Image (cartoon, rainbow, N blue to C red; front, side, top):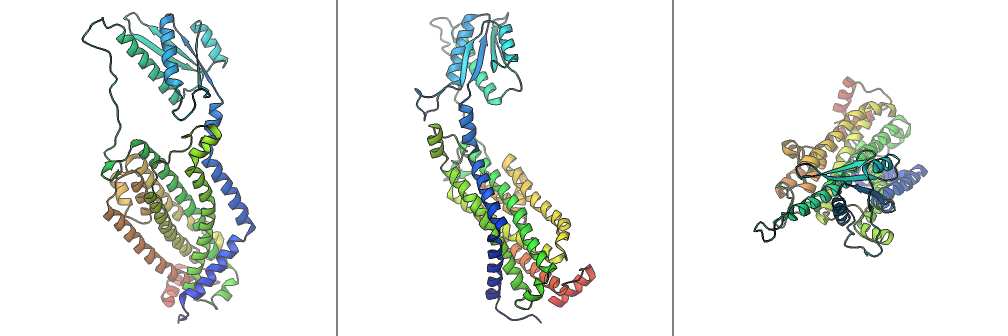
Amino acid sequence: MARQEPLLPNAAIVARREYRDRVRSPLFLVSTVILMGLAVAVALTPITIRYLDRQRVDRIVVTSTDDDLATLMMGQANLIMNLPPPEVDASTWTPPFLIEHGTDLATAEADLAARRIDAILQIERDASGNLTVGYRTFGPADPVRVTYANYAAFAVGILDYTSKIPPGSQLGAFSVPAFTAQSITGPIENGRAVDPVQVASRGFLGTVFVILMFITILIYGMWVATGVATEKSSRVMELMISAASPRQLLLGKVVGIGGAGLTQYMAIAIPAVLVLAFQDQIALAVLGEIGAGLPIGGLTIGLLFAYGAFFLMGFTLFAFVYAAVGSFVSRPDDLQTLSLPLSLLAMGGYLSALTVLLGGGGFVGRVASFVPPFSPFAMLARLMVGTVQPWEVALSVGILLLTITIVALATVRIYATGVLLYGQRPGLRKFIAAARHAG
């Protein structure tokens, strides 16, 4: 017959013990400091790359048999490729490209092969009078630089075209059309579509959030499973079951070990988030310009709250599932076999979120956002890059909370059964019999 002690006092004692033992461990402290440093370094990576990149000046040689075309291409390339950012002082800013007039193509190709220059822009006029422009590099061409060169070639084509218009012609000069990009599935705020730049920012941040959730669940979920299994395999269980009921032990271990994991997670995440939040100020101090870090303009308080809520619910669900697995095994070594299916479940949630972030998700992403254990990943992704009705969020949260409750009750039964089979190898028939007795 189950003991009738109050649940919370003993569970709280177990939770405090588990939490204290984890956070005071030298390995916990050392790993937290190392991971914190790595997280900050990763957050600073865009600024570091920008700093290193600004020290480099690419040499591009323009060649042509027509000196006027070469001069025209050099001027347009300088205007497009060496346009200073609006937030910097142009008088102290170093252009990233050095555009030079080459003597001939053969000499330029020899310099390119010897890596004395970085690229060749060749412009010629064919027999029909049309312009042809080639961009040559030593290795694979950088997409951004190719785009710049393409814009320069387009600008030269426009100027060449307008120069042939007879004086007084009613045709007029060439006019570049206005261009905008907008997705019909993008997020809507206050009745207006979110700016495409902010949508791209949310897509990037959504990917970061989903990856963090996936990694955290795998690492700290295994902490919970290992803690439960290790206690069962030692004589500590003999003392614990005489002081608290199985459900008190289980709840205490999930809260204590999970809390220690979340403490480490917050210690790692908070400095990285602060670096991202103040990226413009850091870039201004280091580079003398802003906007050199990661794009976080699309991030709002509501999205941060949604991430925190779905992260905690997803972590709680998987923590109970991992605890159930740890309760079932008789030795910690057996966890390696049973942890694979759980990893696949988390991977399924991760992949469902990626389908939403990368392509909208369609029907599969929409269904996954309501089905635990995929919903914490998929619904967060939908909130980041799409339009989600309030009733959809409420339904997803309600189903997720109901699932957590059911899984928690089932885990308590499994843990209680494991206690009854303490010291024995739990075969299926024996496990079912013990489960009936535990009820």
